[in-house]
Length: 241
Image (tube, rainbow, N blue to C red; front, side, top):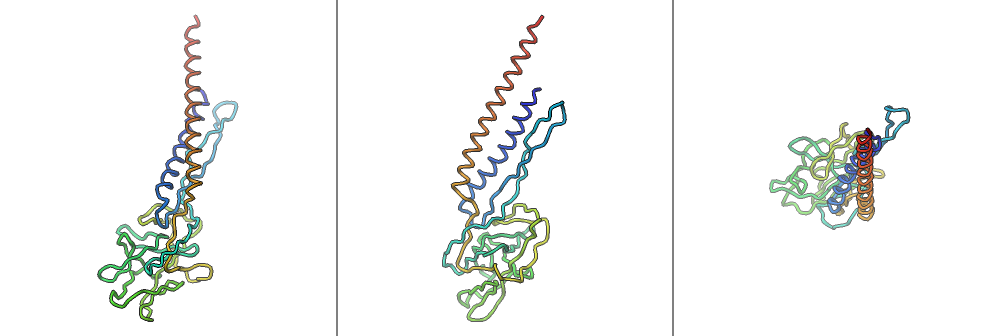
């Protein structure tokens, strides 16, 4: 088979992978704390034949850690992470780390996410508040107060830069290395009354989506033409007596 067909096929697979990530990013434009999917592409050289042929890899998908914009809500139960840290959430399958700080208080006083999962303190325990003691005041270090009395703290955690991230619930991620509590709040902290938006640029993502769709169509056309030329060559060879 012509090497051009292999090249076209590898490009189609790579572009299809990129289309999937772009579609997911666009679908989550309004999801608080969402981290966009990105794809790292490589090429490798075919060693079959005298002349090397470059193929596209299918691409390695990774979760972007770029920060999203902070939107002020004025809601005491909305918190945003100002910096590189993450909030820890307890789920039935283990801890998940998120930038979605839209909180609520359960009937029994547990501080939890809008999905009903407990937010954890720096020690990894759930946080209990007094449902009858009035509004919560949350400091930059995550310390929670009611009526001037400290009742707990929202944990802020750091994920190692080299850790690989997998998707979790609540716009969250699951690192393959342990996250550690943040103890230095210079340059980062918790902002009460704010929500972090998705780190997806809508104009850029829509532009990329159009560009990749066009590229996919071009590669498909090139593949069709290459296949047709090969079929024509086979027919001509078959007609040689």
